[in-house]
Structure formats: structure tokens, C-alpha cells
Image: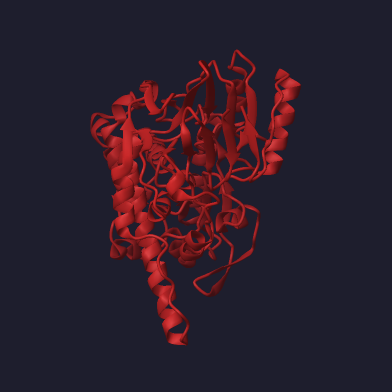
Length: 467
């Protein structure tokens, strides 16, 4: 009998982690994600494994975002040495993500240990090292979509396109126990059908158990047309006020979609004279990976790209300036108005966006645009919820900038799309709702029953089911 245990993203959005045990499979982790928010040193230290890393036979990864993959180097540092199955493009993105995360962690650790040294307190040992990052990347086995791969004595995994970010996958895990196949389907993060670059999520038809995300289980997004109208209006109003625009953006997915939309506005002569800055070395590197995979993306949308854009998204937007160095980032502060600044982190938990907040969030002519989900406990969530004073870098800042949320640019499916995806299964599988805050999952569960007669369960952290 197979057992599934919920060790993350159960009634919460970050920290995805599920353990599957079966004689057909062994002990396999589905995701090994990090909780987002707070200081990197505290965050990595506080992540505890409730299983023994050396007992895990393999990891299956739906996509590269750190809330799904970020604890893999720590797992390796604790002795895990098995294969990590993911898609080919996810494997390419993981190197960028892990090296960036390691750099932030190492810098934070160095600063914390300097403070401790000054006060005579014991130093903190790193939870993982750069060697662990490299070892983790060597364990990754990139697979093509739709290819069935054996991962246990009587088990296989197959990836389908989830349409969330480059390389994102719906995971189909098949176990053969006592001559009978049992299928678990994990949605990963399902993409928004309004996405400009990603294909629509695929729809599996057969499963015994389904794990489905519910990030936006309590609401739908605006249509793409409404979304872009709102975006144009916000830009025009900020231009009229003589302000700047700050956009916290996830390096993978949101940034590339944003460049595409801004490029479309430029090509249509609707971008005024905005200077656009991509102030994120990681996002620049990720965009270069996207360039290599443009040929597999949504044909209808990428057909709009110019010839230059088909080789490089950055070339589709001539006013885009790529800022790799700290000096290039700091130079943006001298621009009084007319700058669109795209920087990480997407939930404002760190990165260069906070430095731009320091210079601009207290000025009422500026605008701050959120284009992705903001988890509980993050600075981004505080601002979306209307916080009027925020603390950064040891100082308090008055929030006078206009705050806008453009939900239609989200990389996640809305409520209606989630319900349609769940209703696509033909054999009435057991449906578990995960990766969502409790209120969103409750609303989704109720809507599934009322609209489709589909029963669903909402597991809690540490719970388990047999199937």
C-alpha cells in the first residue's frame, strides 16, 4: 500500500514537500521547497526535515521556483544522494536559482557572524555549502515532457506541461502494486491561460489520487484585455504625475512575461518615453535561458515577436537596460522620473527592489505594481494589505507611493481554471487541495462541490493518506 504524507504547502502557499512511500517506489519526495519570507539565515536554519535525508531514494520536482526546490542543497548536505527528476529546462534554471540563493545566504551569514563576533557570541555554522549546491545540480536528471521514466522497482514518472513557468510540470506518478497500477497526479503550479509565453496547462484524464494547487482558489483573474488596459492606465497616470514605477517581479516567468508585454506596448507606440530597467542579474540570466526555449512556447503569442525578439526577448524592447552590477543598479536612483524598474525579489523579501523602495516608496508621485502572489508574512503582502509604514534597513519608511495589483499577470490559474482542470478527470479520483491559504482552499472546495459535484479534501501539515 502506498502512503502519502504532507510536509509542506498544506494550507499554506510556500514550502512544498510531500513524501510518498510504497514497496513499488521506495521513499520519494515530491518537491523539497523553502518557506519564503524573513532573513535567509533564519529561513534556512528554521527549515527542519521530519524525515531522514539518507532514507530518501529520489526526489521528483515539478518546477524550479524556490518554494518547490529551495531546500534541495540542505537535503544533500544531510546525506541525500539519489536522483532528482525534473524537466530539461528546469535543470538549466536550477543552476541560476541555487547559485543566486547561495550567494544571498552566504552574504547574510557573513554579516550575522560579524555581528556575533563583535558581541562575543558563538558563530553560526552554514546549513549547507557551495559544494552541496554543486552536488545537488549533479544529481538532477532532466527529462523531456511526456517521456515515461522508471524511478523504482515498479514505478514510473511522466511530466506534462503545467504552463506556469519555463519547464513547469504536472507530475504523473504510476505505481504497480500487486499487479495493479495506481496513479497519482500532482498539478504542480498550474499556469494562467492568459499567459503570454506559456502554453495552456495540459489536462490529464486518469488518476486515483490528485494533488491540486489552490493558490487562487477563491478568485479569478481579469481577462488579458482588461489586464493590459489596467496596466496601460497605471503607466499613463504615473507618467502624468512625473513618477517612476517599481515592479517586484519573480526572476522566472513574471519578468519574461512583463518584458513581452512592455515590448508589445513599445511596438504599438503606447509606451511613452519610459526607460525600462531589468535590475536583477538572476532575471537577466533566466531571460537568456528563456531565449533558448522560445520555440516551444505559445505559438499564437510569440508570433507577435519581431525578428530580433525571436532571438532575444530583451531585443523586443529597445528601451530595456540590463543592470547586472551594483553600480548600474545604484545609478537608477539618479533618475527623477520616467523609469520602470523591474527587480527581485517578487515578494519583496530581499533583493534590489527593497533598495528602490528605500529611495522611492515614500514619494507620492511613484507607483508600486504587484503582478504576482504575495504570501503571508512577506513585505509584499504587508504593502498589498495597505500597511502605511514599513521598516527596512533599520529605518521606518512612510508608504506614500500608489499601490496597484495587476492580478491578470499572475502565473497561477484562477478559480474557474482550477475547477475546469479538476473536472477533466474521468474516473473521479480522490482530490486533495494543497498550495493555498486555508480561506482560498475552503472557497475552492465549496465551489468544486456546488458547481461540479466534486468532493475534495484539505490536508493539514503532517497528515497522511493511504491509497
